[in-house]
Each structure stands twice: as structure tokens, then as C-alpha cells.
Length: 190
Image (cartoon, rainbow, N blue to C red; front, top):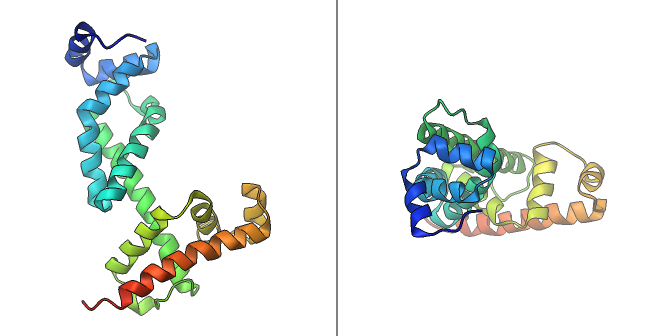
């Protein structure tokens, strides 16, 4: 790994996006990825802010950029990197919010929240999606497995190496968090 001396920094700043990707993927130069982040971190955050509130957008932007380390192998050097990155991150956000939206709608239809289907608005779905993002990893995984994958407690237990009782508890705890936030929203007058 090259040290970040002024000469190295000047050299890397002059490199094209394609060359930085090449150096990261084929020469394993982490500094090349650092320069991609420096150039495009704000773009990734901006895309995320279209889908999430600011605190969640910051977390998602960082997480998506870390996922990008593995996703870069899908980039072809004859493509426009900025456009490719925009599409890559946009797809990540859409996929993530669709998952959260599906969980929210499914939880509502199964009676997992305090709302009925007729009371669901974009604001309610956004609140539920944001609440899902704040749940701990085990709660979120179990809720997604139960509501999206339609898995039983036993299947969830086997998948995540926990007991069926723990799976049920994670789901109930996560739903309780969603219910408490949705109940607070119902008391707010528009």
C-alpha cells in the first residue's frame, strides 16, 4: 500500500475513474478506493437522501459505499463510472426501501401495527420503514424472514441459529417498536 504523500496524492487525483477502479480491483490499491470515495461520497449521500431522512441516509450512504467495494467488479471500464455508480446506488436504495415497504404493508395486513389498510399513507409507510432501519439486526432479520420470506418461527430459528422462541421474541419486540412509533404518529394532528 502506498503512503499518502503529497506526490502520491497528486498522482491519484489525476487518475480517471476507470483507472482508479482498475487499480483497486487488479492491483489491490486501497488508496484508489479512497479517492473514488472522495470524488463520489457526496453523490452517494445525495442519492440516499432521496429515499431516507438525513440520519438514515448518512448511514445508508456509508453502508452502500462499503458494499461498493465488492460491487465494483460489475463495473466495466468502458462505462461512465459516475452514471454506473448512480444507477448502482439507486438500485440499492430502491431495493432496500421496497423491502421495508413490503414488510410494513405485510405487517399492517397481518395486524402487526396499529393501522388498518385504509389508514396507511406514504407518511405512515415512511415512518415504519425508518423504524425498521433502527431495529437491531436480529429483530430486522427475523421480521423480514417472517413477513417477506413467509418463514415460520422454526425456519427462522434454523436459518439464524437461534431458538424458535427467540425468533418469536425478536419479531414481537420489533413489532412493538413499530407499534409504539405508529401510535405516536396517530396522535399527531395533520
